[in-house]
Length: 230
Image (tube, rainbow, N blue to C red; front, side):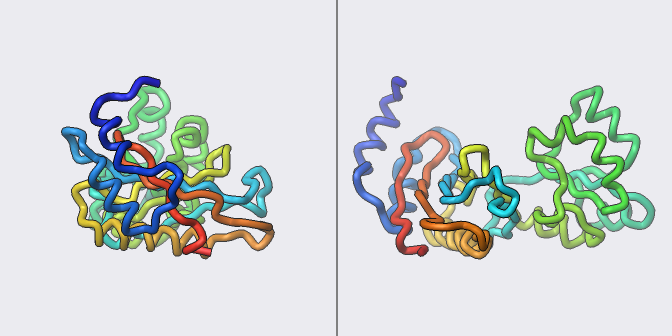
């Protein structure tokens, strides 16, 4: 794959044979984020688990202390007094049955996170084929199926992110923007790592953290020393 000049220049800063400590890695990622827009800083964590087994699934959510730097649009499925509660909490969209055809037939997906009260999951379940593949299906483990819609919306707006394994047992999550200070990125990264280490399944054997790579949207990956988190 042919890389651009900026990428090649940035790649020279990074020694691919080295596993860096957190602060050094963050500094390198910031230096190599040279795009004309504010790049997202992402973490890719390969875990020593087999997500095909239910008892080795790693999934959850964590509120990043400094948020993600992105404005998150929240859709809440609710009824009764929970509608007003969701609106008061700052949800961008609130509704019920009437939203099903809009999402299913019209392809409306102008939201980033979906929250639902448990009594609405029968309705939301009908959207499984649309929301599931996009990772938008509400889930109790992620705190997005709850009666406390105020807390759910507040947490999401404050920078709550969801993490889950993909098919290759890797977790991909944003931890901020390249414009963040190194301290802000380090705080967010530590909060994420603490949550993932805490989420280690009891049945996981051997090395849990196989590899950790930090990168910006357009920049090269920087490998981290996993032993510091063991």
